[in-house]
Image (cartoon, rainbow, N blue to C red; front, side):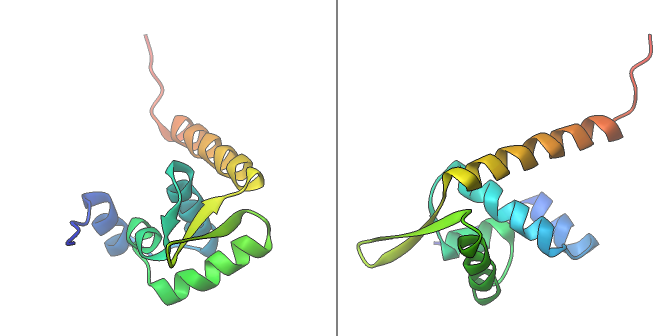
Length: 106
């Protein structure tokens, strides 16, 4: 299956590199939608599978992500704690957008 990169992914790659915290946030955001394989997460986050496996191991150690095996495939899903952290990050991102957006004057 061939995937097209979104304009957002291309622009993000071209402009700057991400911090580890930003990558963790993107992984949690991708997993908030549904459980995914490592290949799917790597595609969503525009990163390498080997690098991502180390990050997923750290998130699992912190209790944010869990591995689930199904028909010889390993899926990753958020735990309750991971869902809480993901929701907190989503609210924080939303507040940052409001803070940056121009003020509306009447």
